[in-house]
Length: 370
Ligand SMILES: *Cc1c(COP(=O)(O)O)cnc(C)c1O
Image (cartoon, rainbow, N blue to C red; front, side, top):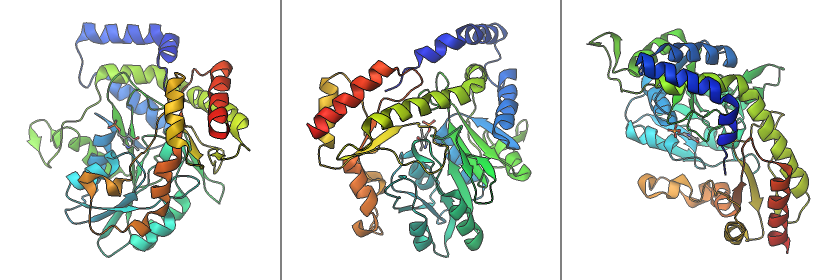
């Protein structure tokens, strides 16, 4: 599904030298690379504050803590996403409110958000799923109409941007009150272990968050708020510093592979290629819909042929044991309930070549329409 070695070979000298220097200096925590990476990512994203942290799940959790959300506050997010999004809402004893997604973009359905808003609603968490931004124009309008926070889960779309109707373009993760990302190795900007970051343009919130990631300490051994221990290791920051200048080229390589997949697969019966809203999909995943009931068979067939694939996601969050809730009604989730039966993600990374893509697409077509 992913091939991380090709990227490593390109930056090997720089990464090995940086890591050796860190080993020699023993500055494993809060070394200079962390601060430098923070600044470089702020510049890249055009955001005032980046707060590095331990992983993308912590980033979401700390963002919600920093906004002062309280037990019982309702937080609306998508039913069709990785569980981390709903997990942190529940962990903080906030009330998750899962809503359906759009059938074409797979992103949170704005009409469903509005329907779910109650006097207890405090925040919306759009997930920019598979590398493409949710409908941020409408989400930000709703948020301002109902006075809600917007927390962007940008674990899958770093490097993407979003165009507003007035022509303004903003980077994914920097449009809401706060955004989060993950540097898990297979993400579009991945390190060599766990890592994450929080983004905000709000100076006060940034200050709060910087303390929260480090035990609520603003002055050493003075704990002003309840925090957590969630830091980006110096070694991971050094890896990310080598990779950040290449992020645009990584996204371009993913886009190029996606275009090749699509040109081979589009127009085929029963195969729906990804729906692209603007011009900025960074293809964390390349996800098809197989509409003739052969999705599960295709998964098995690809495995037989030695082609990796993934089903993201096989179970709607509202049906996961940990998140069952009698508030949910099946008729509120027609799209997610359908998508879990139809989606399949093909190998997607920066090292795919034409021969691999041709073999994968012809195998898919032969099976689905053979
Ligand atoms: C990967 C991911 C996360 C969690 O990131 P980790 O760094 O693995 O904790 C959160 N949300 C989404 C949508 C993700 O894809």
